[in-house]
Amino acid sequence: MWHLFHPALVHFSVAFLVAGGLVEAWGLLADRERAARFGAALVVAGTVSLVPTLATGYLAAANVDAPSAVEPLLDAHERNGLILVAAFLGLQFWKGWNQGRIPAGQRRVYALMLLAGVALAVYGALLGGELVYLHGVGVGD
Image 1 (cartoon, one colour):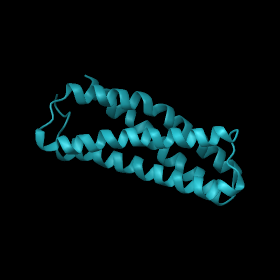
Image 2 (cartoon, rainbow, N blue to C red; image 1 turned 120 degrees about the vertical axis):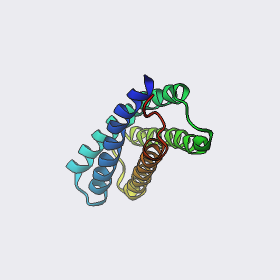
Image 3 (spheres, rainbow, N blue to C red; image 1 turned 135 degrees about the vertical axis):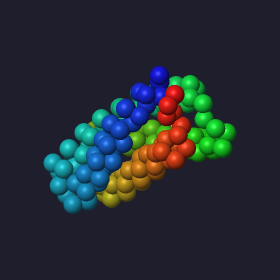
Image 4 (cartoon, rainbow, N blue to C red; image 1 turned 90 degrees about the vertical axis):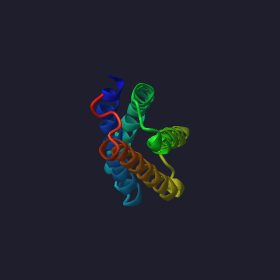
């Protein structure tokens, strides 16, 4: 049953982190404050949504029979999820340390880190899609 909750939740995390990260990075680099704030709100929502997404993912992995051939892929997907949480929590901590605003001299580096986080989110989504659509993990259980 838990494998049904993970794919439902993961779409929110991926959508919020990718859209938010792209918009916030663009807003920071183009000096568009409203866009940066809107993107930041989406990134916060995506970061918060990672907690139940990861929890249901681990529960799903414990309850779904995966062929031994896909274990390395499943491990990579899980590892990517943990790295993703660490990356976005780090970005939130960075912003919180600066009272919610990234100083002008740090905006480019912060935006590049956001884009790296977006790439991690996309990579994790591709790994998850490969598990489901190419290997049938969690399908028909």
